Image 1 (cartoon, rainbow, N blue to C red):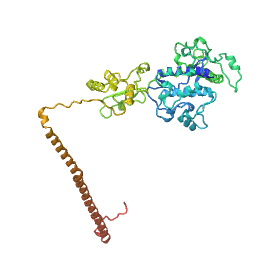
Image 2 (cartoon, rainbow, N blue to C red):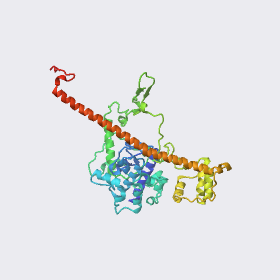
Image 3 (cartoon, helix red, strand yellow):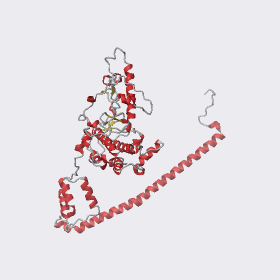
Image 4 (cartoon, rainbow, N blue to C red):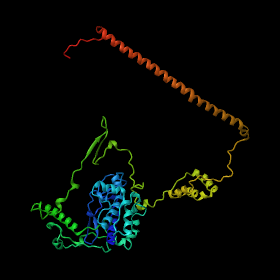
Length: 472
């Protein structure tokens, strides 16, 4: 079982590697979405939720058992979710059930976020297979084996794939463990666990020479073991759909129309939807007509943010070039004498200072230097040159020192005054202002009370008295 699973995982890995080179993440890797060809190799199907991504995407989609932790946490995910699903798929192929299986969907999500730390591998699992699953299903996306430097080469180096020729699998010359039957009569007469009616009308006869040559597009291969029953059910569903579409064509046009013509959407012939906008305000000075969906010209910035991948590298740089770039530190030339002097006085720092001056110091070198010299450095400088002063300036040394002390004393006295007296006057002014505000409010309160008593005793003297009319 381990050798068969290794073959199909190798094929899936090649297919995923091809998709990721095109900046496409599949996000729906599972057993049901892989079909065997007549040669025993399997191609990926159902790209309905595949997406071209240069950085991260935040859409939660896929199948519950194959979700990655970053997808459930909604912190953004990238192509690493496909490698997580590949590890889950390998576990299912050998164990027969999901590693995060639970009666409730919410519990499945909790198990996925918890990771493989609490998962018990069945007895049939070999140590090599367990190592492969754990290396693909690490919690942090950047820690997964295919996301590190080297990519899919790291997966090839695992002991689980010992004895397998990856180039032969890529060229479809490696013997597959299972080759499906292509005889329609045997398939239709096979006794299934449930009745499946296959409608063969409208299906074009299969021709082996019509398949693609393996050298043309090996990257579209992706393999997973599916049972013959699943293949027959999917073939019968496709046959019924094609047969129904063929019957819907009029009898006179049946000779000229292909059975699959009814499924053509003709998107290239549909009229584009144009949108128009003008400048805000009057007069109208410019107008824009565009067909880009979700495009707001008024909110469009004057610059575009450069898309980058998960490592911060611009997305238009291919991985084979970006992974070979050595990022080094740049020091302005005016600091070269200081760095050279520092290296000469401190022999331990000499290699690092030479790398800085020559522009060869990478982040790894800096990290090594930091952890080696994180403690306070003892820079050996027996003679530190004093700044040059003339004889006249040397004579005025005491005067300059006294003047500096006097200015420091004045500054300290001024600070004491501001912090003591000025702050005291400020608080006093606030207190006086609050007192007069309280006096005003008390006077106004007493005035309101007196006027109320006056109107109660002599209402005929109330100002602006209006006799009610009754019709208002």
